[in-house]
Image 1 (cartoon, rainbow, N blue to C red):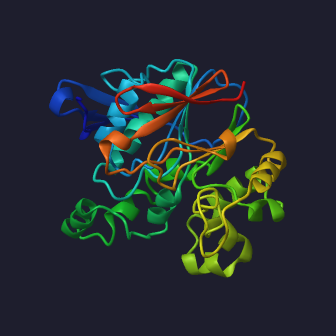
Image 2 (cartoon, rainbow, N blue to C red; image 1 turned 60 degrees about the vertical axis):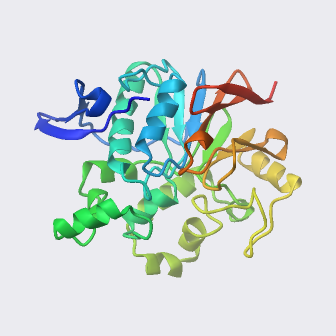
Length: 322
């Protein structure tokens, strides 16, 4: 499958241009710089949704997933019409084409809006970690480049609040509701509900404190809840027991759905062999192993029917809410 890798070409007036290489060497991608607007957290009706998560710098796999499922065309231009895509966190870390993914999503966000569609980019733990200078999982390419440039950390500098991509990421939410479905990277735990944390409050507070020192976050009870193991970027309680907490029961999931007034919850973060249907279709897991090409899948939702879509574009129905 042909893929494009962005190679910086030039800055223009409020634009940046990249040349494609390989099978896309004749193409160039001009991306308009835009003013950063804070993302809303609730959206009414989207005609169709395509969801994926945890790509972790595997740019070629993401291109295949989007092309073969008709989200973009063979030139990587938006072809999903008025549909919405949800990037359910963790595009960063591990892989070696992180910035290629981000610039593509930055561009597709603009193309989608022109077509009446939408790109929703939700922050996961691996977006927030580099912004907080937690670099445990960055690819060695970025480590080596930082050494050659005599920078303490290339990746954290790339995503500081003084950069285009850094400010763009800081405008994003960690959870959003679309068509009555809650999308969040890891999950919403009962602790969020018991503390009366609304989705608006969760988004606002995490965005406002991304750049606080980690020791300061740990010392604050509210921030340690939101950024910690029970928070929306780390929680795993839908999937299995952990030392810190038990797997949720069906009544607990029902309570969360009622409290946040949603019909379903879609999460990434925790690796599943394929798109997972949990709690009789009340929860879906969309994260597969980023190192295994044939396990990459997206979740397509239209007219109350949920489909798993593999990297080759093969679609299978997994649930219906009708």
